[in-house]
Image (tube, helix red, strand yellow):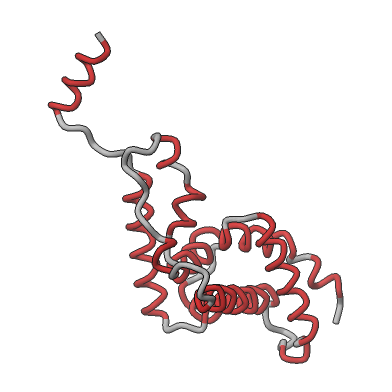
Length: 170
């Protein structure tokens, strides 16, 4: 194995892990675990194929396993509890924060969004990395984009709300 081959992909792995986990420390741990697993399983990589999708696939599987293990620990909430809609009363800057909006997506949607929208993989490539049917990738991407659109679009104020705001400013 050429270490140089792995080193070239670390910035992309860190970016993906940071967006996937929403936490720099967890992301660094995930990258380290991914590189360790890649070194141990190097014989499974097929020379001549793209290395980054293989590494991202390892990372995705490790992340899913961590989420599953975390969920099975009786001291934690369920995964569904992690994906509540943002509070409409929250400051506008908070609602418009893309990183938080991505973190609020369910893990499956977030992984697809990151691979297709951030890493610019095709649907077929993302399906291969995540080991999913292409239709599932397309569906998760559609639902993820819609959820992001809803989270990142400021609420529309009615005419009555605008009049009341104007009166309050006087």
